[in-house]
Length: 390
Ligand code: NAI
Image 1: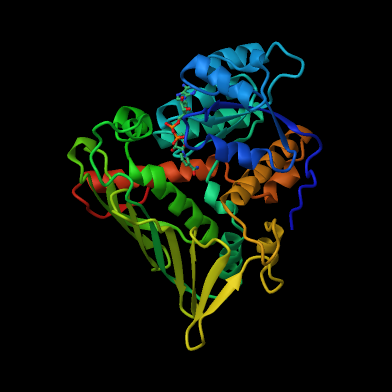
Image 2 (image 1 turned 180 degrees about the horizontal axis):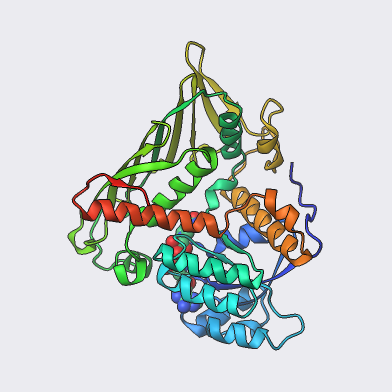
């Protein structure tokens, strides 16, 4: 169980690009990073609007002199300080991730970047090579995968409690874009434009969360083929999609079905995961992250609760609140940030042995998300035909 004791040798000097006053995701980063004393926010280029970014930075306790107009100034000015920033989080629209990540790595800074990581696998591979050459970590904020019961599902699958996996059922849908985009906020405008969002809208925006979580639970299952059907119910969003269905064939014969949509009018249920094996199934939703359904064929269905001693060690190790007291998204983000901090700390100490067994969402996780998107787009653009997974 985690209790806030600092698990790394000293706090990391941390900066943010984006995530300012108007940004949706910035606070989740700060909630996660600042929980365990592992990161100290020392600087930022928080906003496209430099004055608003500075005002915001000061309001959250950053020195005015270290609230910069943009990431280039942040990198250049911090490099001149003895106590300059060491790790930078990137919480900006998708099209900026690659260039900001590259610039930070070239300047010797670790990076924690939002998903979808970049636009192409080629960009991911280039950045992975750069990070390796520089001895730096790239973390990716798949923020839902810090929930303890996600790791309970993974442990149960690994122990064979479900039997052979047959069916993977994934859904992340909401209705926030059910209407048209006239007068839409910036966060919708950039998401529905291929220049700023990349090759996908909902597949990258929310589908990559489903895909990464399924990879954590089923690391041994590899997709062999997939079929993706995508459409834009609001025509102005084409060629990007506001709704998609993906069918997946895995190497062991298992079948997968994934549904992402931002036009699922009225749905506030968000994410749902069901993994079905030959003996039993588990089902989890981010709406009730403290509970896991465990359905054994022929037995009464069970609800497992977080923090209880009957859970696997992997799940209990990620627990923060203890049984009876609810855990939430902030706790999940805190775990993701902690695991990335431990990776950065190990790099800093030259402890490569630690890194061979330590699990955190890194560049490989970001790359696999982008690879999955490339395959989805290839299938969808060929009129929703089956394609071999490359
Ligand atoms: P947003 O549009 O709400 O906010 C973007 C923020 O970045 C704003 O503060 C804006 O001023 C700032 N910004 C834009 N360009 C900048 C630049 N070049 N330099 C400095 N600041 C800049 O976007 P939102 O929803 O916060 O998404 C940002 C990223 O986070 C996206 O990649 C998105 O996919 C991801 N995201 C991830 C979530 C997760 O659960 N991991 C949840 C929501 C978003």
